[in-house]
Image 1 (spheres, rainbow over the protein chains, first blue to last red):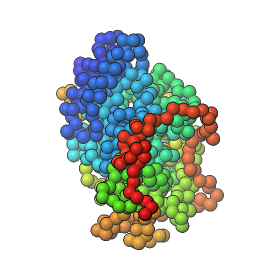
Image 2: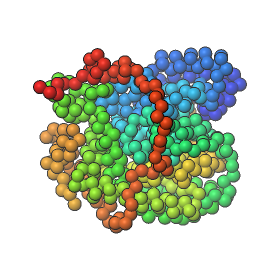
Image 3: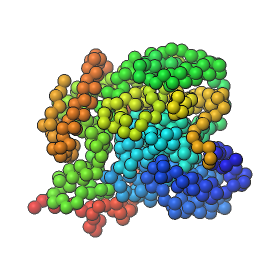
Length: 487
Length: 96
């Protein structure tokens, strides 16, 4: 069996037994990453020399008795997570040449466990998009159908998993940017509780919504990765000081008797028939596994998109003010005065969608509009959060589709921002509430495109949603995350 | 409902230090209008007695000991500067 088929948990076991060297794994994945790069465009930066250098350093450390949970595992990193000495562009012209002088906390944590930082993945510019089409470095294509988008914004990270360009990846999720591409690419993606994973070194988009999380082929790997990146970080004042459970070790706990809520607002017109069919099938599997199924209501669901596009953009308009061409990144040329420097730099450096969101956010916060837009949206956010809190008084987890559609075609939704925004209708409210949620594969539509389902948990209950996912995965005999047979 | 016209778009752009060419302005204004029409739906709800949620973090005040920590090297920081002189970022002249 090809080593490419092995999960990181399996690779880890082989390395621990010394049956295989980290170098062999990394070289294999370098070959695979390069083989598919032209087709997927999943990587923005792939510095082979740097990767080989990391392996050499790791080997030296191993000789001295170094150990960790991810020895020699290549992990692809979304290009909005700062990596010391490796270009970090946010898929924007405005940061096209930015080389961070420090590592994000999650990168430090991965390195402590012996992981290899394996290339920086493509994304929507500043994580603003649902199709990976707003990237300055060109769109990413979906391995299940090259004419289709992989979802976004973490499209590159999702694709590295389904094209086996990497065995694991990190992404970020502000309104669905991990879960939606995971669903559209047929892989596993988890957004942790807000504060579970440090955001230090994650280039900010919507600071009250952003979370970093893992992409993987299976639930075991997802649990292992989450375990490695979670935890308190004094450098992020919103990081939660609560112990990290051994998620992977606890996976096998029985799910009998757990109550799963099915929100009726998530099975509305516009959700593709095949998706509803496969979710219903999954519900039956959970019934067979001994879970209790209960219909619930999250009455303010439909307001989520409107709330999000006022709040996330307001936060973004403030966060993105720093890109003014002074300290780093792109600077407009032949400028005579400081104000023009700011304006021209932003005008030339940001893409259309980013400008639209800065504008919307600036409007939402502007004097005279603040109460009617930003503040009202923040009040409706309370109602959305309370819907979940009320639901979790009755159920342990909530099950619903991740996305109303499977992967759509390139260019299909680019002319109408609202159509694009609606792709996130089932993922956005989770960010507004700050709760954890996982997207896992649950079948295919008639076109052969992967379908994802979402399991949402209460605050800090990642373990519960992982255990439910694991039980489902074992029952169906694993996920088919990659469309190619030959590798 | 707020009517979005080119003048308002230009005003918001000036607040954000952005600028649009005349030929982009029509399309941008139209799409902006459409988004604002969409978010109008929030007015259906009565939120008079609902407190706003600005964040969902369980932390209260995050305090730390006031201890000097090592910071990044100046030379490292300046490596990314589009223009610099000695230990400073350089920008176009501000005062005549």
